[in-house]
Image (cartoon, rainbow, N blue to C red; front, side, top):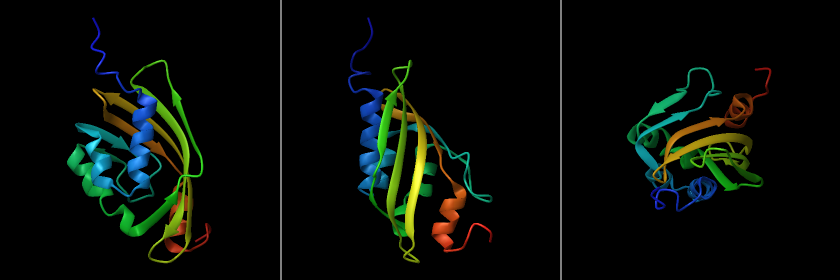
Length: 144
């Protein structure tokens, strides 16, 4: 008999919960939703940036200062999809805010693929536009 506690909360709701923590700028709370052995991947990270993080501590070290650089004020769009695998959810979402250091607008769209085990994130893969990120952070044009 399947342990119903493991799937008591749908993967789609778990993913929504993680985005609520992100919007609340609670990076510790966000990483607490991850398993100790979580793997996070950012395949489109800007050149010179780390693309893969293994373990909750490494991921927290990467994310903990994020709210000091970008003030995300809202998630204007959010669509969360279940998949054939009850432990996997996908989100298409956007973040809107301000880059704290330069006052530039921060507008980013994401596609996120998340796998859960026992209610915790074990794999997090996020796709976003590194050119838009660099433009917001630097204020430069795409041609720079």
